[in-house]
Image (cartoon, rainbow, N blue to C red; front, side):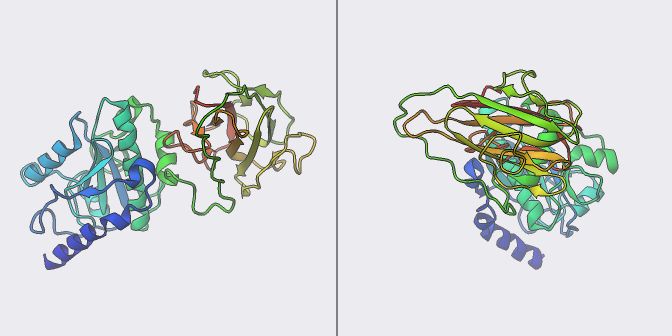
Length: 373
């Protein structure tokens, strides 16, 4: 138990450093250890480092109350996890990392150095803060223990929902998907967010430029029309689209089809854009829009499948700050993925639109000072 005691002390001391990488609300998240089990409590068994488990509490109660309850009843109920997230992005620790918690059955407990509960709230504003912290905690825990950040894949290592444990190992739980869905988060978006986090990829060879600061005194807002079109892979250019509504109509692309080239043009200000292809990764930024110039006027390579899009709009000096809001859909999923914004104001989906490995079949864009999606 002395070894465990030293480990716990080290974990507490390293808390601040562990969360340096979290951005926005999550960056301020400091672990509360008021309800952590003592060195003589909880399982003394070490874990294998194979999975990080994502839970939801299934009760609408403050995270602090859940932490108090697990601390008090860990032995009598035989149930506790390492972390509980909630109360507007706060983190409460109960169990010790690297030691077995009792949260999802013997196999899961033995293979998960970290299990995280997401406390449930009816408040959408509180949920957004909780969700950012929850996702980043899951992701950074996986990175810390050398575990893939993929969610619910067919492999036996990665970030796993309690539902995945039920479907593949044992149990009857389906969390956290029902709760996430109640706040508009799909399985696809959750997987995307955990895999890539809430910041630009550190492996990005062409990092996204920092957006122009919002004018202190906005002078006037201009109508900006954005026209864009996609080219079917090994096919032809589809009809261009001007702007997009808030519904399902008004998109570039062809449902259930793969595309290999894209051009985007704005009638005011300037826009740079690029695509990610399954074959090549991220391609260089494009500043022009000319479908007849496949070198400098379009993003993409003929015959190579686009699975991601990224763009950045620059507002002319002195005008009301506007940006590109955009979203996409893939051939392998129903419904649009989350909305992106080029300056990071839409929590959870600001890096790029798409899903690695899945052909992008629909794209919607608008330039505005707010999102209509």
